[in-house]
Image (cartoon, rainbow, N blue to C red; front, side, top):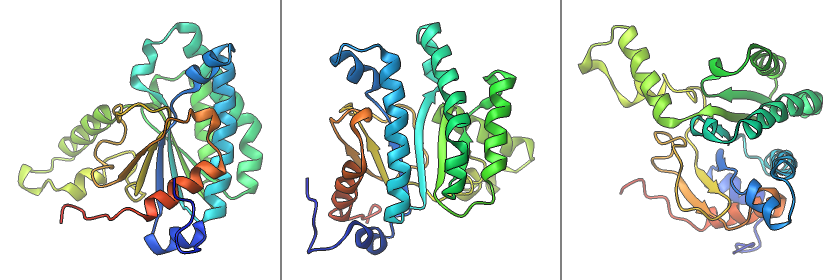
Length: 242
């Protein structure tokens, strides 16, 4: 993968391409663990470390928005013990990392249907959002119990509930009813783990995103991985259908 464009830094590429928002499908935690003969829990824990490193890299490179896919609406179909572990992992990660994230200026936002989560976990998530809401650093969106089709259905219901007539429904209006209403659409979508699909993730928002799939498992993703992805993005020509 290209790691240099005419001696420019990754920060140069971010500025010149106006790269504001990176979305990531963090895939491969379980496969990484399996290949190393480790329990899947270790893969998920290593994935948390990869996310932490990625947030730091976004700050370093000047990327303002990072949205990551942590738990989909379909993930409830996994084994109950794994679902329970993921819920506990999220709660413990927020408790352990919130102070440092806040000190680094990170704004935390959870997108998805949080009503299905237990009240204790909901409080942890809402408290984290409130605690960091006035920060001015990287805006980190964590998609949890998120499904894009579900998001779009909820957006349509919201428009209907407001009594909007059909002729007044626009793309902009729908965008304002989505979980991502206050942030720009992703410029770059990265999927780790090598799978060639978008898995019901930000379907509306990634209409013109550049897509990069890497075979690297998410626990292996680091600052260099993000650097390579951004340089690859810098070599793309975004035509927006033109």
